[in-house]
Length: 92
Image (cartoon, rainbow, N blue to C red; front, side, top):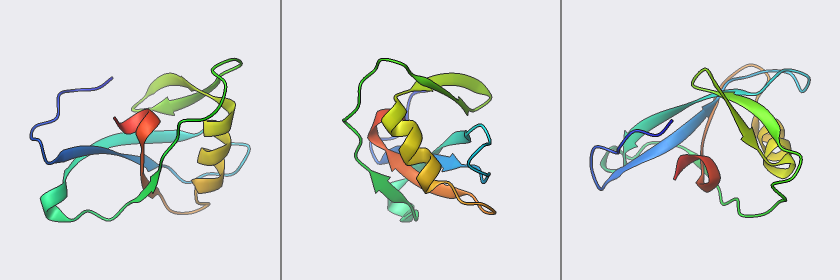
């Protein structure tokens, strides 16, 4: 899923597609250069049990995340516009 970052000043960001709470979470990873000052929010995510994971769709691939991260993604997702975030559990 992860390709090599092109430079030491590159990071991955997650674009969370809009949707309702009942919709499957869909997202895509993009690579940006910090020198271009991209706008994004950050969530440092290191909590939650790996038991009973939930599927999300990222770059058209199903990936499993913890229940807690899934709940955070539901709260971060907008109804009508995408949201760009850096989440260490997914973007590192």
